[in-house]
Length: 472
Image (tube, rainbow, N blue to C red; front, side, top):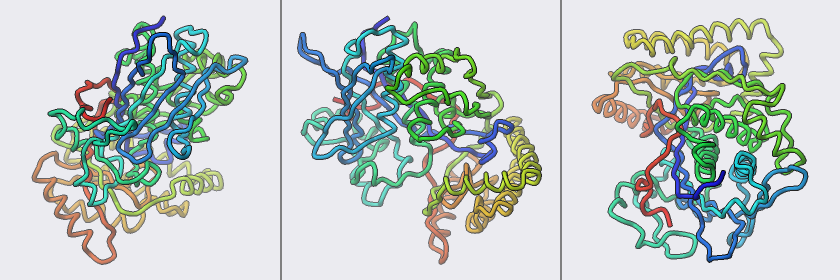
């Protein structure tokens, strides 16, 4: 069934793994995952053509960055290979974007199967605009004055005349960065998973009739989750835990990963039988590849008046190397590592319970107990999951009035901290002042409070007015 390909806008949140780093890689354990107020937004629009003219092209652009346009042709691959895209020249050189390209291969193939399309020309040309909320990228001080929608009248950016009265509001939400996308400094909020999820959701909503796919239905979210997980893993070149995609789709939850073997039967996009196998895997009907993910939204909430806030720490971590080292320790000493992981799981579950039950008086102690075993895991594995500099910072933050405690989220390291705090202006002011003074002290890196907050909601449709000045 086809539909009129109207303009749609979709957003998906970033993530923070508050508790369950490393454990979430193993189906025997779970992670306490929060969605974030920072979102990746994707707007899908049909590209108008003259009568009788058919255009096999998908244009993807991220107008906040320099040279951020990717053009793709597409065709039906032989032997049930699905819809395969090919990047076209855009500007003086071709810059690959594997997350976008892989998502297009997977989403367009599924769309063609779900709607029973025959030739690829039934998929009409489309323009996809990607806009990232500011907290996904560290902004240099000079950027603040350049926050505005594009004003170039070139063919690759909207004209200044398209900017309306909402300009000031939208300008503060989406910064223009004086760099290419590859040169931007990410803040580690899960931009790739949010991008793949939002891009997939926008394509499904744009091309498929609501009787086939709807973001409002649980079955629609399940299809989106499975398809986005498959595309994201293929783009990464490995099967991860998937908690970041689950957060992008469902929002905050406790998460138990899917069995990695579910995606093992999928060949490369465009290979023989890719289309049929992808449809079966996404729909959960392929024998031996039934999805066993557990996403429990009811198990997670924050007490009234408590917020989760993020700090950007101006250092970096090589997460992949850290994960390999922790898993090597786990394989080398399975008995000791299991005992530590079992106890850490118990403490993580207790933290989730304390938050769910609104026991503010117990938050600080529950956080301390989680951190104790995270540090123990780090010591035993030789990995700086909670480095000494982060321990010093988190311990000091506990002394700020209104701060219940904080952790080094996810795989840990030097680049971020997640805090549980009283949700009021006075606490935020005390936090900013503390971090400002902390950053000035010798031996301390720059630490800043981000605008992003924990949020319960996952992927959602958006009103087009939110993006005034950015669309053609």
